[in-house]
Length: 118
Image (cartoon, rainbow, N blue to C red; front, side, top):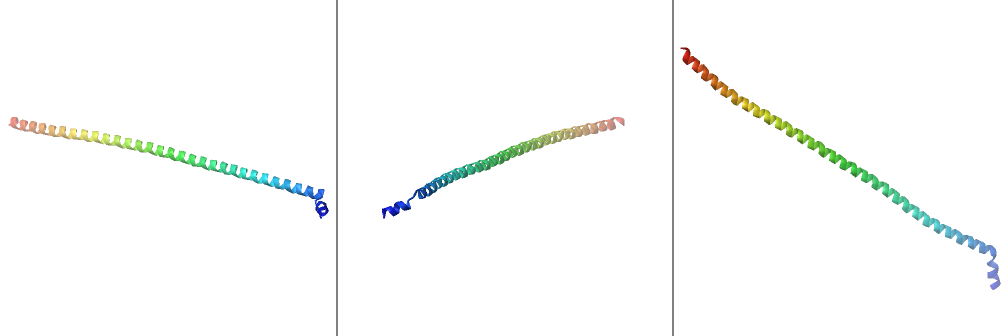
């Protein structure tokens, strides 16, 4: 019985077993390399996604800053317009006061003229 086992375990069988063990080792290495490559690919894709999100965030912040600047300019322009309107209203009020004074003086002059003409 021992001779049949050793007869079955021939050098050809040993070569097949060695070849299978080598193939198994290669498959394990390939599986490990594939896992590493998948991890690296995921890391690259994640990095690209995060870079895009950062660019979008930066663009959003820049737009918000530009909008705030435009709003500040619009408010400043509105305030300047209000100041001009207030100055004009003040000038118009002063003009009305001066016209009222002038009207009184004219009436007084007309009255004086009428009193002294006759």
